Length: 246
Image (cartoon, rainbow, N blue to C red; front, side):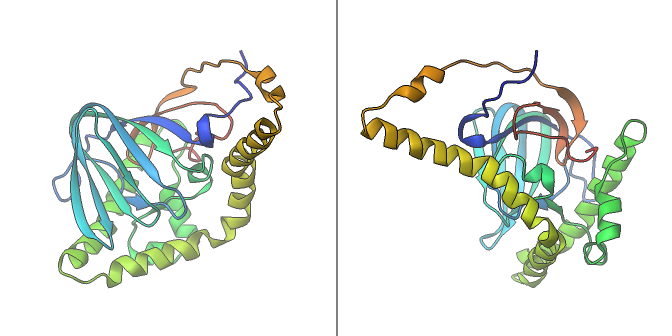
């Protein structure tokens, strides 16, 4: 059965994550720290326990996660999902399609961020055999850079964190035209449809209700290697196209 033509409400992105239980250099088990440039992300915790570590102008935070918790972070916030025991999260992503098109930059060391080819080689996972080993290397490299940023921020020096944000922006600059196309076709189009429907209702026209329907979907891929953990994805319009093998 082909996927439905209707996007999720508001053209949001949707996936499910089981946080990695791989121990990193600092003794913490969890995912690959990263930030988004234009997307707010939300975690809806459905099972287990853990935390999300964040770096922002507010400083360093360690937010506990347990069933029922909803935690979200705006663009520019470095976030790291931490496994505390069978942590499972449903992820809601603003501007669906943009993270999969590159609106996510790992906290790799500065010399990697400065070289687009080297960054791409470290960020991209191979398909099939070798994916897990590559995902571990990617996570470890991101943690290496993250720990430098966190140490400085905790000490009151936001310079390295701000420098990382600037490097991330430069790294993705050439992708912005594609992002704009995806945004226009997804989130912007969804908002404009609502505007048109409001205009129609104000004029006493309810014709759009004649297209009412209901939809259902199952994950199209389970257990992929995402940034924060094993990822279940949905083949829905503009939702979770795989992260280039990751």
